[in-house]
Length: 125
Image (cartoon, rainbow, N blue to C red; front, side):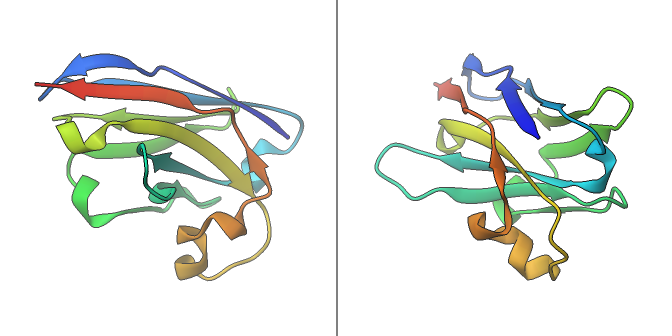
């Protein structure tokens, strides 16, 4: 599967953005899909994941602000980001995988076999 991330941009503190991750290839519904992000000088970190069942999990500091969702008919996963903060500034990557894994494993980049190219989100005051 190939992934194409889009929707990044420059916004102000408190604004909203919606990222999209469009997938090509069959059986998109059989993949779990996550968003990771990497800020300058920092390691890539988990943001949110949506499983095949559409169950979702988030890192603690985005809970209540970010929402991950999927549209299997459109082979797209979204990340709605509200109340953006300066510390949300990063390149956001979407990733997909199919190997059966415990939830804690899905928080790690190693669980994913396919990655999009990244989209930059810049939050300023």
